[in-house]
Length: 239
Length: 46
Length: 218
Image 1 (cartoon, rainbow over the protein chains, first blue to last red):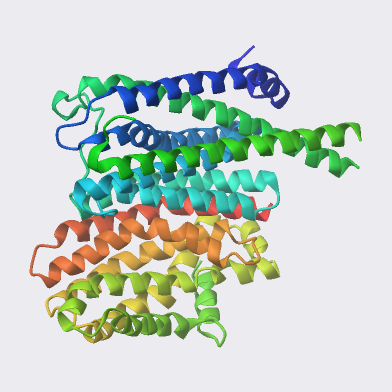
Image 2 (spheres, chains in turn yellow, green, blue):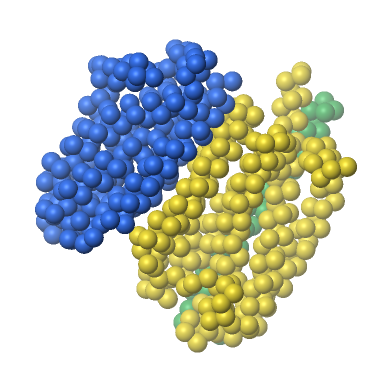
């Protein structure tokens, strides 16, 4: 039985059913432990004071904002090539998750930025790229909502996702060119100097894992809902 | 509550808004899930 | 293909084709800006490159939904799809027609409007060059957006939401080229990037546009 068998809607409903509650459970544990650890049991940063605690929400959300779009891109490609409806619906289901993550990243970033940089918003490359990503998500969701026929909608949004991805990368480069920026370099780079120090690192990893598992739980839940919605439409049409 | 010092409002509001958005997302997803599941059962059995 | 081009050009120029509309909009937006930010010339000089580019962008956006809409409604788009012309070619021709009727006039009108905004003297050449290099990209990207939304009744606003984020790289490099030119700095990097984006979109985007058209014509 190939991997693609699992993409069959009925099989998908079958194997994801038991997983969803477990995923939510694991995510809850990771997040609760990670956030409490980070919030209560880590020291203040020398330069940033207690605002460093925002990192436990800001960094995971920002990572998921990008990862969600990548997942949508892969799912869109699978739809276009192999026509698996579950894949198209998974992409549709993931978009609101991505929007929320982007919003959390932008909001926590702005709140963190105010005491650190003296401004809620700065047209820094990384922030600006996230703002553009937010607009891409909105456009994607709006296109899904605007088109009646589900297969046409799936096709058009998949094409949009692909073209959007290329432009997102292009924008990233353009925005970097446009403004050198205030934002700290990558927190998780392999280069030791830029790294967040270890005492913050461990709860941060836990929060990142928590966000990832939460994403999986939500995407599975929402995709199941989309599949059920399609089934309802099919049933109503038969009547 | 740890000593948040002068950044207390920032940290707390960052946490508040993030948790609000997360709970909102989870809540909306859950409510839609329940609603659609019930509708499907009605459509299948009705 | 030339016949298609001429037909589209003629349709655009006819009354109701919206030919002068883009230009008028360009003028209006540029005139509005000093009312919004104040008439102080130093401020205007500094923001002029950006304003001119944003206004050109918005004006290009105006005529996008009519690229396919009229043909779609009366069935001629379906006919075009079944003709021996490849849809990729059709979409390029449509983009070219849009450029000739919108992008080119905007480019030519821009220096006059730059004058209104107190654009730095050395920037005028860069303004013309950047718009000339960049507006084709706006047309090609806009044609893609129009293809995505061609089946929709009130697709105009959605079209803007989809297309404007895609315009950002062109806008960044275009405005930056004019700005650098105005300050006497070397503007070759943004101009090269601009040309690169235009070349890239012309070469690759028609495939996505044709795919979107085929999907919508099913």
